[in-house]
Image 1: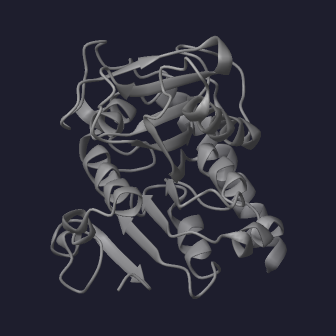
Image 2: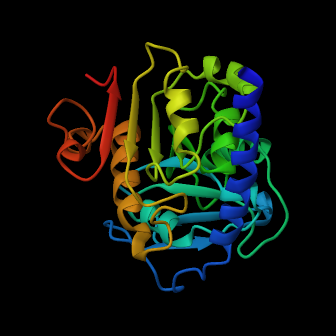
Length: 279
């Protein structure tokens, strides 16, 4: 019975990679996309973190330090603009987002690249003559990823500096790796595309295995494995993702109301919701 479940999940993983590759073929949003938040957002690169793409407010705010979000792409693909619309939306709400891969890049990524991005942000916030010096809140860090990138996020979440983990259309692929779930120490959110999302069952299985005292949220919207990432500003995923990060990394209590309690904002919508330890 156990072997059949593992085999089935591995088969689902292969399908997930194919679906993520198809998502990569969707044209990216227009270069002028800036998100709906209070800051006009852009993406850029740096030789100091060559294999990544950095999403940020075009003008770094003087009155707010930016929490840091690191991102793993679906398929573990090294294209830093694969989720451009979604990541610009997150950045426009006052976050520094670092995606694995250069703009339009190719090849594969791994979890170490997420940790490398965190290390870079911490160093840049302190480095003399860095444009980010004193502009980052390196005490507020999230790791996120879609599909295969979510597995990378799981691995990187063992880092003590991580303050929240967010998985999009993702879940552990094999029971042999469930030990990673026991290392989770920060609040976690799962967002899936409903029963038609091939990772939905994996996320539900993980939900039952994560530490019982961990603050956790699971939201399911019937949009399939590729979600709403390719819609303007990342669609509903962009809206909800920004809200979760504003709550967990900025302490925004209005954003909290969307996720916590029996009358949460998402509870009365098309989202199917599970909550744990969010009071």
